[in-house]
Length: 279
Image (cartoon, rainbow, N blue to C red; front, top):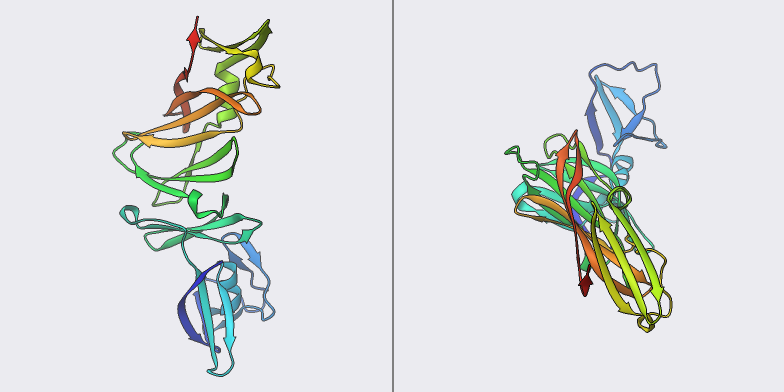
């Protein structure tokens, strides 16, 4: 992964962390984003300051540390950010890249940083999307992160996170699988030369007819798990979930918008938009 050098420090420099209360006689734990880090040189208390080697802090935050013997300096190289949003003073740094996926991210907002166990494909075409909108209508904007965790032929799945930019606290968003399970009933029947695709949402029935020969294999029920996308339109969080009836055929999509309900964003208005509809 391409790296961008941000700072050069002397090899002898140690990061100083002020400790309000610590006893030199007790082992000192080093935590980075809640994860304990064990270094070869243990933290030490010197003049009421806790001193730790810079390498362990830097690498735990996703940076690379290199020793330049000729110049006697340590180079700390931090990963470039993959997404940014100047309006919110936010940047998203990938923590690690494994097999075409970014595994873990460091979110920076107004100079503050926190690690999150999120995943996104490393293909720059599907870089994480950062949005800053008042989607709960409380006159305070939330930070919205839309991640692509799967993509390919007939496949596109996303993950979404809604955070308070001041505290990094997250508000849950109803999963698309739960939306479908609780609100949608489907059935596919093959009659003669036709396939009848039935979709029922809140007692509203839609039937789509297709030629049986259009697909070599038809599902028994409409599938909704292989392709869905989030978007924000007019400060309203929405999701589009594509309706799949065979390995290579989609017949429309479920469209739902979210409202904040009992501390969680839940689907409120749910509709189906398809083609060749009949009742």
